[in-house]
Image 1 (spheres, rainbow, N blue to C red):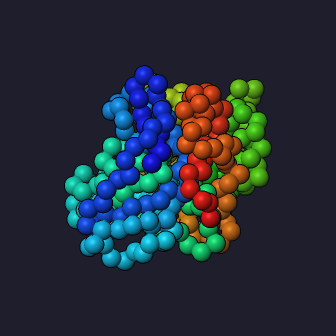
Image 2: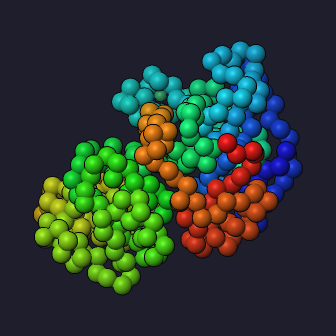
Image 3: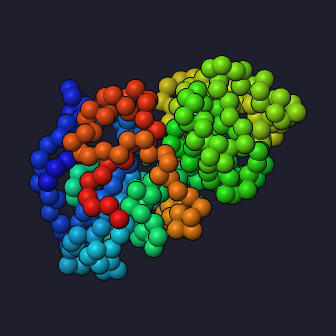
Length: 340
Ligand SMILES: [Zn+2]
Ligand SMILES: [Zn+2]
């Protein structure tokens, strides 16, 4: 089968590899769509991957085959794939299965090969059915929305004003979710005009170009000097964290949704004076994916406008260099199998 594999010199290369062989407790998935995630980019650039590994975890597909002991699924079922967990450890009991260290198995992050391939094999507990009325591209986008929903859940806020810093696919998904969950007013700070325009169509009440406007002055102007109840950092830029604190209201919450892997400076007294909560979110749960798929089936979410690049496996190495690594693409979606 065709796959895109990691290579330390070329970063990504197209290869012909063997179709995974199943054991009796595994399921073979024929991949239909795989989204390229910001975390895939971080992994490639961190150079922590071994040569030959297949990444990609935002997958929609159909069940193609299954081991003798697999029950509860049938060939042809439409599914997305999320990690497994033990269900018994401290983290699982806390409702944070994505922090499980006992039996957490993932695709595309090292345990199982990922979705930049025509087929992959998974543990049946990883499967989440795609409901009626949800197409394969939205299926593959469900995880990005679930990660955004998880950010909102981690902020522990159920409404009020919200500012999203960074209009990549996670930031834009957040805008949409905030809108359907009744938050408002909703603001987005993003330098790229196309992303700001998209944010308005997804439900943003106000957009700011932080390169041409002073974000904090604008925030204070729009909120009568109060700041925002919740601020989500989705730009991945370290400097944005202090900016997020500055933009938050007294008693507000700042949730760092993006993954920032370097030290940053922050002035702690800015936390004291406002008594804000500074937190972060990581990954997402099966329940959050199921919720996002349900909203998709109800027509409340359509992630397809986020897709700027609809490409084949063959195109990925070049698109990675020209559109992903340069930050030009919003969402790159691979078409690998017959879309539904
Ligand atoms: Zn992802
Ligand atoms: Zn566990």
